[in-house]
Image 1 (spheres, rainbow, N blue to C red):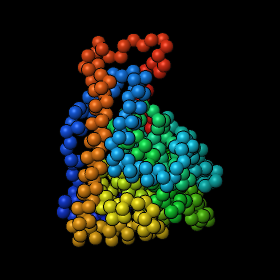
Image 2: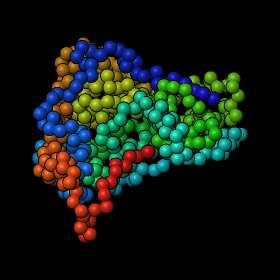
Image 3: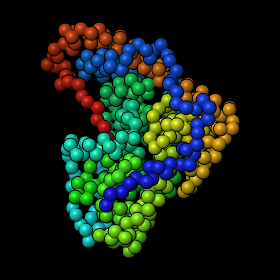
Image 4: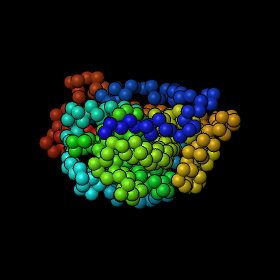
Length: 404
């Protein structure tokens, strides 16, 4: 059956309210340090370095960024203090498991199989379903698994490439780890079953499972998509433990009631996780594109953190309980509409983090300059010299890895 992602239109009620004067999205403050070079120029300079040189520059960046003593660093240190475990001890990401047809739809047991990620139809569908999801810069090396309530590693967070991409985006290298930790700190577990169910891979009616697309993505996409009985029934079974009301193959007369029920489950789960993910992003980052419609509330989120002294535990206590977050945020939005001081506090906090991002980027540019990378990039003949046989890591530049 073709389903339209109705829940994508069911954002928290406050999202339809007009932003307060001065709360529209604005550009980050200009800073001379951030204008030293464009992204392309910085990338070309970086690519002109040999692997060993990149490692040396990454170590130099770590030391130099530590000297900045930024607000971003203070925030990260606080979140890390709430969970002092070594990042290396966190589990690697796992491949998501699709719902088992033999369990959830034995009367229509079409076997599931993974499609190749570069298959044209998989690429096309991924592009369509993720069209509303802004690209995260830098790509995160971490993911918070809402179903398992665990932070997972998705890439090499200690690599020089990750350090470069983070600095290029104006972020400390461990900021993405801090975001994932913060999502877990804000999660009270009340939507664990639902979010775990919607984190299953998206599959079509012929049994193809699409890498990089989850049921959450499909229901958030805003378009029509196939929804096999095994997936829709899997959600109902896993979240509500209702096994007898609907049975595969589900007759057409029951489709509307069944899909309305799944849409209700998704809307509530999405409100819960989307708010917390947006808060985690706004905690460390000034101006940023947020998914699920939260970009236009960026200053409100910053003012919310400011009003709670950027203390996750203090804010988490206000977000606890099923259904509490929509009401809470709506009330906060109304306060921001009426209180100029609250709105101004949010803008000031965002501007401070934007300025610090520019400073971090400037440190990266200075490091590339000191390592001679710009000069080498401008002179092809002086690009990485032939590598001695004994030069470790001379096999060439690696590429960033992204989690699924």
